[in-house]
Amino acid sequence: GDDENTVSAMKNTVAQVLTFGVGKDNDYTAKNIVYHTKSAGEYDFYFKNKFVSHIEVSAPGKHNIINSLAAAAACHFVGASGEQISASILNFTGAGRRFEFLGEYEFTLADDYAHHPTEIKATLNAAKELSYKRVIAVFQPFTFSRTALLKDEFIDALSVADKVILTSIMGSREVNT
Image 1 (spheres, rainbow, N blue to C red):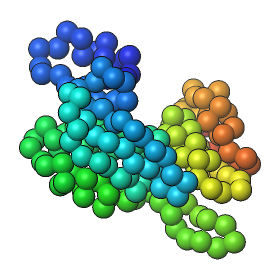
Image 2: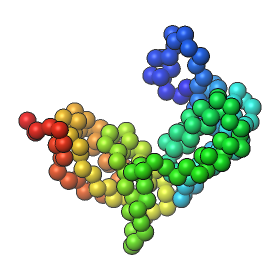
Image 3: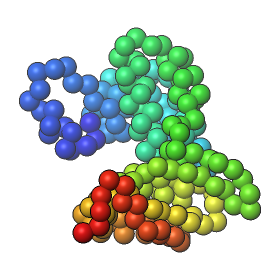
Image 4: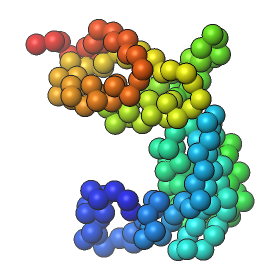
């Protein structure tokens, strides 16, 4: 409900539409959001301004608050209780290769498969929100065409990091022309 493009695309649909987001006009909303330095945070989950449950999110990043809200809305829509929703979201620590913590050394090592600038920016912003002294991104662009097409967006996204190590492009299915 907070994304203008999605709202516009759904405007003339004949299907039932329920919205979610942090805006007050959504059917499902996250209120009283608190962000933590070593986890995503927590919030109160509401449906049509009626409290459903308190949600704690284990996967870091503001984007995971919104992702968890979408999951909570879907679960509530199919009849899950507030307690079931809260427990399930708390136990979800994130998808593999999505800001996946690999170990603690003299630094913290995390892996993320993000290969689109929007995903990269969300992950790097999540890392910056945690209590680390600095964020170093090691990035390998995936295809020549995407790298060329989204060059400016990649530059913007990667500029969130304190330092960037850029490898050569993995052409995968393409040949550089």
